[in-house]
Length: 209
Image 1: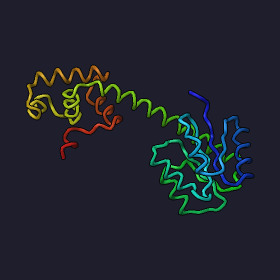
Image 2: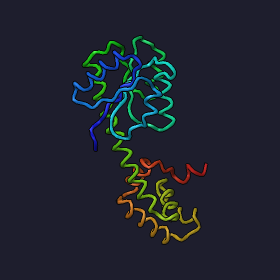
Image 3: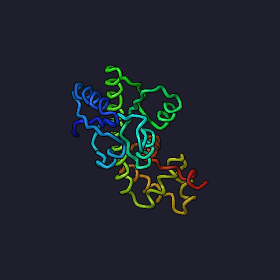
Image 4: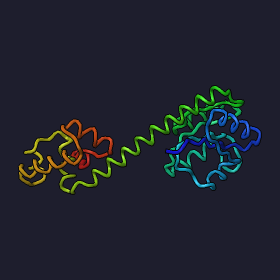
């Protein structure tokens, strides 16, 4: 994995330079942008990192950029910066997943601490997405019938009940159930339930309500 990059977005040239220096002083890569639209036009990085984002900017504000990135499912953590203690904006941005909301002039230790937290969150999110992607790849390898049986197994239903629900023999259910467990590398129903929860697969009863 490449080294993380901190993206500094602030329309104030002096603040932008100062923040960039603080980031680089912490031994991290930094890229700076004078506006939200400039950042969007640059082409978003898929590598690890976080965003330092000023709240009040012309054309597109920080919260507006946060909303835009959210719609595009851009998951890089955001740290907001503002010269004013705006409580409603703070609440709004934190509800939308911001890591922190710092008031300018920013304390170096507070900034670096927030960046460390944001990068740790980014690393955790990337690990979870990678695991989910790998898991979904394995699940996609199930046959349609195996997948259907699996959604009944995770409800806690017995083989006989599943057979009746699907209109197949109990022996057939056992075969499909065994293949599902083998393909997914699990040894028990609780393990299978946890795996399906990670993959966002709903039990059969929940799907049919």
